[in-house]
Amino acid sequence: QVQLVESGGGLVQAGDSLRLSCVASGRTYDSNFMGWFRQAPGKDRTLVALINRNSDTTIYADAVKGRFTVSRDDAKNTAYLQMNSLKPEDTAVYYCAADVRGGSYAARFPSNYDYWGQGTQVTVSS
Image (cartoon, rainbow, N blue to C red; front, side, top):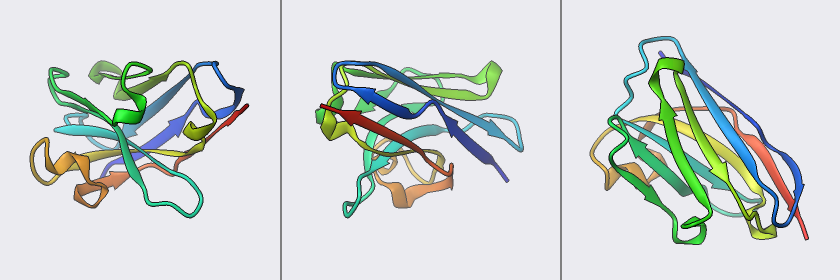
């Protein structure tokens, strides 16, 4: 069993930056993929970014390309999402997820992840 705990969310102004962290516990941190998803009120949970085990594959949603960076530090059992130039439309609850049943294509979809954190709220004011 794996437990994921996100942190780093908050209320910021447009143009500001935040770094989200996701700490994994419960077993050796060797997840094949780590994903960051977000969900705004009344909307579906959608992919923000993902990273594979070796950190040589990263995928980003078009809406965040060039502004967000996903990374992982397996020595610390932690994944990160650096968010720069935040916009009001980035406002959502952000979730990290681990362990994908499938490859990089499957990792784009929340239904294919086995473990989820509780989420952290990010609110960007204009």
